Length: 411
Ligand code: MEV
Image 1 (cartoon, rainbow, N blue to C red):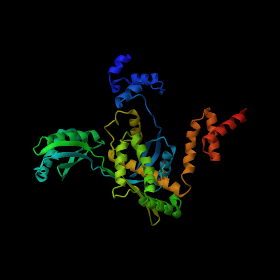
Image 2 (image 1 turned 60 degrees about the vertical axis):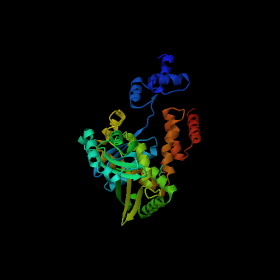
Image 3 (image 1 turned 90 degrees about the vertical axis):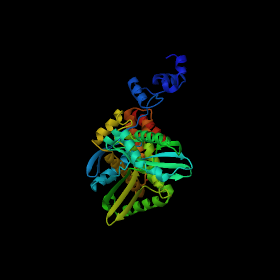
Image 4 (image 1 turned 90 degrees about the horizontal axis):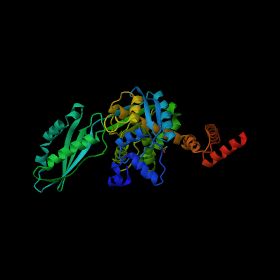
């Protein structure tokens, strides 16, 4: 398109090729992308000019509630997938993970400004009828097993806070919940004694709580001493915020990787998880490890407002691939798999810290990233990788030094 015509339009209305041309003319180098992919991605998001890709790794076998799953993990950090895999082997030897997800719904909020003569008691009497009306209007959600479950209200001065619990069925449910809230908010605003509907939007407050639990023979984790150290580390994480946040980061390594691989909203889960970890007023670790007789018992609870349909899940081929790996799963089962993966990552991190430290395994894997940046052929890269791992020197300088040694030897 000619530039005068183009500049009459808003940037988001431009074709993605026009956006790319514009940046390239500005001297910004962009990655190649085929036009079909670009067009497809442009329909998924806004102001699209390209894509960022992540490797998809797997846990080839994680037993959750006695069923074997292939778990997809989208993450660029090799140690995250390696850690989950290491734990899965130990978990599976001990019968796998037991998990329960309570799919109780997600909250929405409507805040109304009311007049001085507003009476909250008579107002709340209409809630059963409001629930009926919403469920009639959003009949397709009800047909899929969901719908509005509950409305509660509280008043502070001239503001009335409505808390609406919506069961999103198999979806994460953000769009549907927001549509229901706006429908209800607009209805309520017309009533006498209500000045205005201030806002109507879902709340990411923790719900859909999912608990994963393992019961491990202490011998399978390296013996009693190791188990005791792991428990002590876990205890520290319950009281020390510096350790708690890192412990939880390890958990989110697993949780986010599966969320991303399955097209779920990891931002919402991250926000809810931070509140959940702080629910007592003291930020604490999400997991808990203890010893009972000869068993090391680990437990993790995370709020997982996730889905297996809706949003961009069905529109993305890469996400379909993840669901092909998982097999037929319900939202409840997927939440249980995600919590189990979080617990797996947490276990491996605690195990590494309480034994050989985290860096040994981590850097061994990071060596691949170092090698990938070398200006060398595949054979040379392979040799440099071996030398880095043998020498346990994991720096860019060492990689360059090994490369020049290899080249000298070959002359
Ligand atoms: C690194 O990505 C995650 C860990 O720091 C988690 C932890 O310390 O528990 C290893």
